[in-house]
Length: 422
Image 1 (cartoon, rainbow, N blue to C red):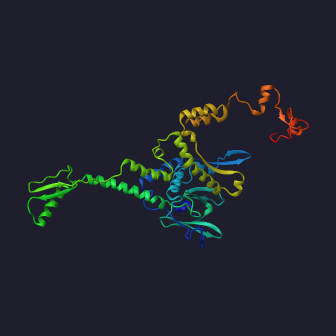
Image 2: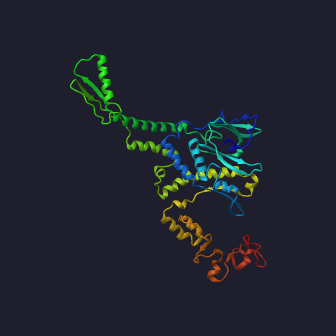
Image 3: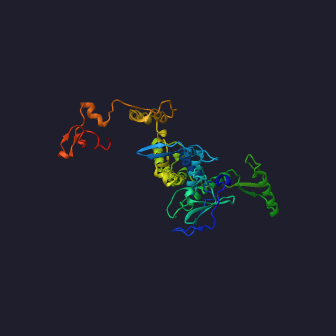
């Protein structure tokens, strides 16, 4: 896989350590331990990643006031198969998962000999060091298998979260989230121990006669072996008249539902979501709030970084961009969808296939045409439509008096020389 990702790429030699402005060590280690192993953390990250993975990447070109979708090899990589090991959904899911787990996510852009993009690979690594070579910034990755690769920062898509103190890295979750994570783990362990304790028979034996210490120990061990082992399925013990068994009540303390909800809500707030999003039991307004506060910032980051790293300055000068967008109307209620189409479709804003997509229905042939209502008229033709005469326009050269027709355009022959719109 190392060869498949990096091919014959060679790491530069004689690199020097890159010096930050505010940090002496340009190192970053991916979060290890139990952060992602927590069920609360994983459900939060999964809720964000599985929805962000539904963003639609598009290669577009903005030119002359128009936006054109470009159906090229880059679009196929973005939309279908970024690399041989992942679908577009898996690719975005992993990138966003790494972003919220490590607060940094790196995607390696593989170029061929002529500068064409042939693959996009999210990088999982054990440590990362920023180095410098011939005045260029490089990243030296160390992987868990011991392989190392140094690549230019310009060939890496880097998105980050909690980008504050460090000059390049997003700060880790270790310090701010560790108290909440420790509390969650303590609560979970307490519940498990309380259940185990309540399922055991505990107490002490009081013998009615005096026994030697070794006999006392023997009787106790025999009682434990017979009745306090896993083989005692019934949970009942039996003693004769020479001994009395006095049970000891084990009342383990556990947090109640309200306390547990407060603890979990603290984790939800850290990730910017709520329980309704995790359970997929959200309303239309809750989804819109989640999109605007969580998914849209991710889409903006991805759009800006992909555009910057996937195109040369010349290509960007011609208006090439990569954008990530979502059809938010898919999550609207049927009532909202119908009302929207009822008012906006007669204005020509949606085509027939646009309307079908909003209603989660397949497109039809010749469905890209737009339907206009005859109740609407071009504003430039409104006066002609109503009165049969051109609109009266103010003529600033005659003190603001209104004159008819093209005389106000400043063209002696009534042409369009003075009208920027023709």
